Amino acid sequence: MASRIVTMARLLAPKVPLLISTTLVHYAYGPAKPSWSYRFSVTMALLRAFVAHLNEVPVSQSQIMSRMTDEKSPVNEGAIATEAVILKHYREKAAEIMERLLSLQGIDSSKLGWDWKNDPAAAEPLLGEWTETKVKGDNYKDGRTILYLHGGGYFLASVRTHRWATWHMARQAGAKVFSLEYRLAPDSPFPAAVQDAVSAYLYLLNPPSDSDIAPIDPKNIVIMGDSAGGGLTYGTLFAIRDAGLPVPAGVIGWSPWLDLLHSMPSVLLNAGSDYLPAEGFTQGGQGSLKRIAKLAKAVEADYVMQHHPDLPEIQYYASNAVLDCTYVSPLVEKNLEGACPMLVITGDGEMLRDESIVFARKNVHASVPIQLLIYDDMPHVFQMFDFLPSAVDAIQRSADFVCKVTIGGEGVEKKSSYRVSVDGELRALEDDAVVGWEARVGKLGGGQEVLIQL
Image (cartoon, rainbow, N blue to C red):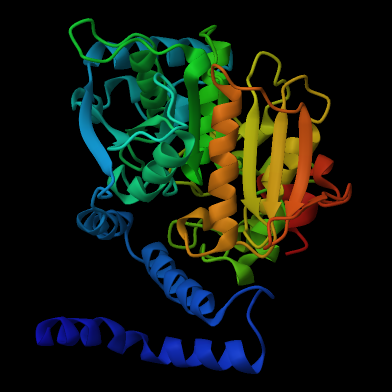
């Protein structure tokens, strides 16, 4: 016991000034958002400090720090977790699909910035983890499956760090969850993650004949993810559709990163109520919108900023030349026909809020059902804070969506966009939630006109 106290004291000592300042601000000036308790204000302050540190150190060190959390992510005592290996031929088939899709968009290795077809990491086994409950509840349906794609900016985190999510969804959706250990940037940037996700989907549809896994009907599969994994979810869906494969029953994005161009206002406006670094992960500052703005002031109007020769690479995951590719930034997709029902959940206090709102708004006339839920006061991927009523509500609504869109479900309504109060009450989203979004979509930082004002 004494050693534990000493260890805890060593961990907390450097954070004492932060805890004191957070306490003073919370009680003297109020929390960043009205519903935030003191506990949540402190939680956010500590998480913001940790994430800021990740943004300041070399990416290799960030990844080491992220992997250290794997050891502290045990399997829930009510769950069964089983490792799975996706055989090489699934990845090879997915590579053929991605090569064809990228060719149709005029994207080759020179635009991608690397020889993706000869990635040494692709020779390593593609791993995943099955999660299911030990005791099956009344809501369990055999065959109902969730393919989960973890978040982490495309360069951090793992299957283990997101066991909290796979456990919640397995239990509350009455499903088995397959979480994928896809390749990470910067060693394996786009299209590696999409290729791996498509590989996993092919594996679920047609597993090896000598395995103990039965083929899964695509109408019984929901693909979902959080943050970068949410963006990967939608990029994977569009790749599946464009390849002519049967689409899944539905997709869910928790705070999905749909726009790597950072074109929407909330990226800057909501920095004070989120734990993500101001302006996002900027590769030591080189991807800062304010830095990019200096270049914007020196070029002609309507110049496509992501093609500026002096612009450094602003994302770990994809080269500047392909940031406006549908499979990288799903927000730019113009046609949802042939896709599947979608649930998008975001927090009103998070930096990625507006891209979720605009994704629903710009596709309001599509025949595909899109449900948008915006939770009052909530930050990025608030579902991980399971002591919050909003987190509990959002997870349950996600589970309900899975049950409704898979085999035997009642289906979902065609379109809906709601704000959700901290008490779980719904109210219609106002029409002017994001003003001027039409002129921003597909443009780095929202376009030159926006950038020069920074």
